[in-house]
Image 1 (cartoon, rainbow, N blue to C red):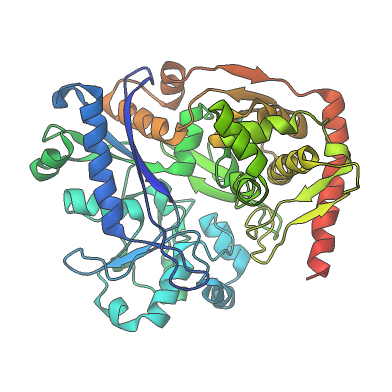
Image 2: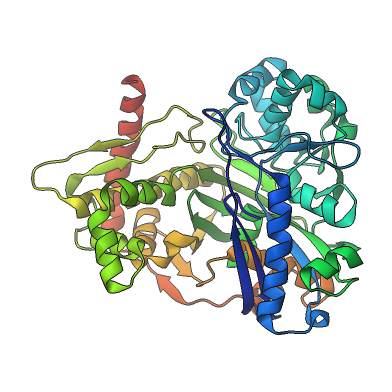
Length: 494
């Protein structure tokens, strides 16, 4: 269950996709800064895609051994005692809770909040959103029985029980990242009731069997084990095989991220709080940072300036993004001196700056479209390098990077990633890495694999390696310093 769509995929025990189905989700924006979804639309899309994937596979319902979930983070809705929604789901894109985020800093020390939860002060987290609901929707809040994430709502509709795995809960800013329990001190400081939160459950263990009523709507066998799984961010790392020391996972989707899997919770010792730390599963944590501006910046270029590439792609029967990114290959690293800070939608890591703006510097009459495209792609990776270096300062080793998301289809972007980060980049060819990660947790639950490492070796295949080119890496180091200076200057010009 992503933010913009729901996908159901059927995997075999070796990680091969046997069938899949897709449904888009509508994001409602009744006011500026609001970004909501209808919980029931997510539920219907889940049932529909499950049914279509099972039907498309041609397999008997009894051949499906388990159902596992990967889900969007940071969304929250309220439901009443009958489980009916009292409000739409407020997604991570929703900015209305920014004032409440400021109030949290007055209720308790911001770094203490971060140290306990792994979540720095950001309006994306459900804690601030629930405060907004309490202050602005007193009637519904008084009738609220539970506050639920997107996946919690789906699971409650399916199984009749409000429960959440530790991974999704870790993105709420209400879970103590050290003991994996709801943090009573934080809830008390915010004036929130713990009994409104769903029960915490292990994301790897089967929590229930699929009821007959749901089985009939999905084409599955009644009694099929249901495994809660984890957050899409955590499972993207799992589905890429980024579960060992020194192996980072990068997502180049609409948003972007760089994460590592750790055997203990790790947070930034700097009060700048430049990265988060969530939970994965099986005693593994997830230090990293997510960025607003990745593939969405390329989409902005396509929609506003990319008419020639769109027309060329139509003639060739190709994806417009393929044409756009290949155009960037026609200019050398460094884009001929053009540098872009791609913060078109504010930014959350490594800087918490919702008012951040994009900057393009170094343009001359000698530059063309290809230079701007390459500068845009390089700028996205500079942001990821900024986060990676903050983590390395805290002793987190990164030797290899595994990449997923729509941007990972581009060989040009994968090589830019290797050259900017100075790391070997591994392409596994699994675009839906988080769905594969959910299947891997389900496979572990069934006993097909002992642990994450064995599941990775059994279900993931490496397609291509990109080694960093040392001269390009040196050049990018110089540009990276200018990129950070540009961001600092841009703040003074607002």
